[in-house]
Image (cartoon, rainbow, N blue to C red; front, side, top):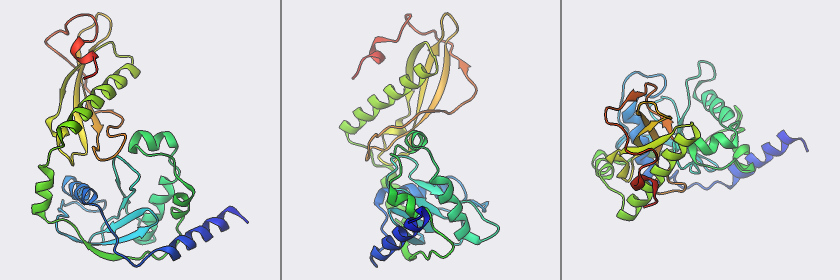
Length: 267
């Protein structure tokens, strides 16, 4: 049987096995979706509008959850991602929202395993996932109404801190990932200057880690890293990226010629 024929049968079998139950979104994923809505306008719009308490349309596509709000771009949840769990479709000028979703899934399914791990903290796609991302213009999604957390519950969630045990783990992993990143980029003497306090809140999507480094006998310099975090799902701390392209000098010199002892040991 041709590969495309097998995929079509697999998609049909999965759709046939779907129940008529509600399209469920976890508490964490609702919080993350509201965060996204308050950070920037969706594709094709210019105004920012919080989704707190909003009624959305939600559809299941295998393991994925797809939501849409007031006709704007769709958001796609991949529950196997540890980081950046929600993706967003673009705007299609031909074929409407369904075409935009097909394009998003077409591009996403071609992500290589290394990119999936570095950007999302997830493994390679399974056969069922690949089949579900091969939707066609004839695919009908089972849309249902869902309502997100109201503003009060959302604000309370944003103020919730992780446990002391989780805080120690996140702090340790952030330091290790920052040093690993600097070593991979040929940095010399490295010191962790600061980890943003916001990293220790339960629903913070990322941490800001400030490091200083010096190569050979050159001046000390500072670099700010953005590191995705998720205390609820391994690997808990993701791959760092530079927050600032401009590297600035530090007035205070580093102490000693190597990694400071307090930061060079596991805590």
